[in-house]
Image 1 (cartoon, one colour):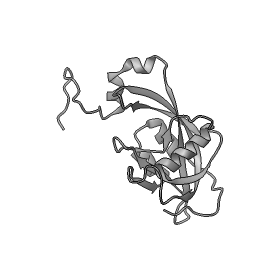
Image 2 (cartoon, one colour):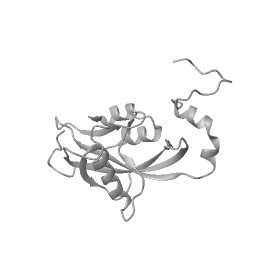
Image 3 (cartoon, one colour):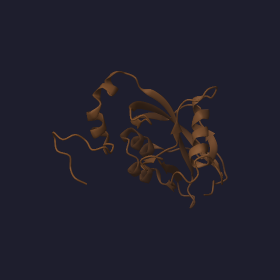
Image 4 (cartoon, one colour):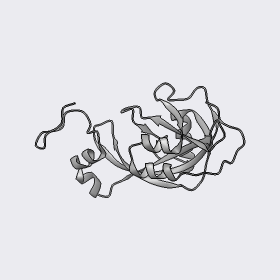
Length: 178
């Protein structure tokens, strides 16, 4: 990949780093118009019963590592929307806690080429079942990894912190098998 010189315009591809993205659109960040999203931080007891594993998935467009998330849904509470996103995007069912464990911000590239700054509330979701068929099956890569490995994979600094500090109590006995 050829480096971009200081006075050179970006190629048609999206900038790779968050700082590069931010530098291109300061007006988006300082106008106070952040959009709300809800995410499920899905976890299960590790297969070897030593600690937990968290679910990371790839985004459909860029292939970067993320957690299931989406927009608010009519007549659904935020934690319910997070549960639905986890099922649609990753085929996992579970119970999300009603209060978020934290939040993070990122820039969402919209279909029209515009960018929307988003605040994502994250809901701890213990996975109890993995579905064989689900809406976005085959469109994403799913992996169960340690919280530290998940933190290494995701790009958003605030999400990295949530993952590194994540230490839930396992509520259910059955282990969701993949």
